[in-house]
Image (cartoon, one colour):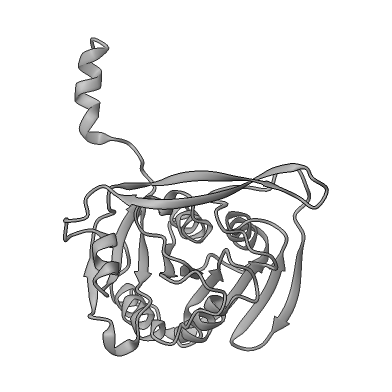
Length: 260
C-alpha cells in the first residue's frame, strides 16, 4: 500500500547527538516525505550498538512542536529512543524509522557497533520500514550537501515498494562532492575487522588510562561487490541488513556433528 505524504509518520533519530550536522540535514530531507517526530540524545552515543539503559531512569523533554515536526531530547541510547517513542510518545506506529546521517561510515563489521544502525534494526524488529544513513566522514564539521539527493532516491524507492519483513537498509555515502559521486551500488557487507589497539596514557593526576584506537582491515580488498569497495570508488553503498544472525548454511553440518 502506497502511503501519501500527508499521512506518513516518520520517526527520526541518530547516535551523534541532537545538534549533529548530519541529523539536521536528514531532518530537512525527511520533512519532504511526511510528519517527522525526531528523538535524539543531547550527547553522542556512537558505538553503543543495541545498548539499552537499565540502571538509570529514562527522561525525555519536548523541545519543539510544529505542524511538520516534533522534537524530543532523550538521555538514553538510540535504541532507547526508538523504543520510547514507539511505546510512549507517538500517537501510532510510525511508517518509517530513519536514522543518521552518521558522522563516519558504518560499512562492513562497523554495523555491529553502530548506534545509528541499531536504531534502524530496532525499527525493523517492530516491522517498520527502517533505513540508516551514514557519511564516510568522521568530522563534526563534515559536508553533508551531497547526501540529500541520494537519501531522496532511497526513500522514494521505499515509498514505492516497502521493504520485506525483517530487513532494513544500511546506506553509506562517500565523502565526495556531488559531481564525483558515481551513483548507487547495491552491495553485500565486506568481510573485515577492526584491529583495535589501546594507547596507554597518563591523565593530569598521573593516573593511567587507555584510549581506544583502531584500523580497519579489509579481508577482501579486490572484491567489487562489497560496501567497502563501493565507498572507496565513490559509490553510495546500499546493503540490505537482516536481524536474523543465524548461520543458516551451517545448521545441517552442525546437526550432523550432534547426531541429530
